[in-house]
Amino acid sequence: MGPGEIFPGELKARMDRGDCPVIVDVREPDEVALAAFPRAIHIPMSEIPARMSELDRTREIVVVCHHGVRSAHVAAYLHQNGFERVFNLYGGIDAWSLGVDSSVPRY
Image 1: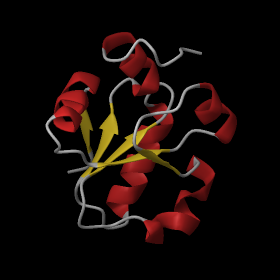
Image 2: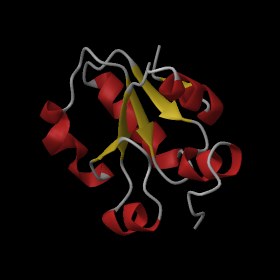
Image 3: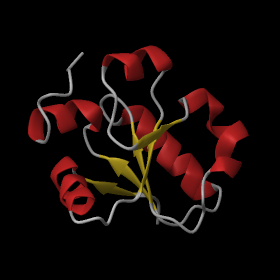
């Protein structure tokens, strides 16, 4: 079994009740500058292999990108490398902006 998915509303509900997983934003720096994801650690997708040691394998991790494609690849990669509790944010930050927080700019 591979990584799972979490929907924006579910992640927001968990954040609101203090049950927040580690959020890893794998977008490029210029994308993060346009629309930051709240409480996220920024590690661009290309840097994940070299920076995996910065992530706690015992914590639940949600990976985020623009539309959920890159983050799905990173979630699968992390899962293949021993991260058992990893999830992709379905629809990415775009879905977050549309369904949870319209103050996050869409691009």
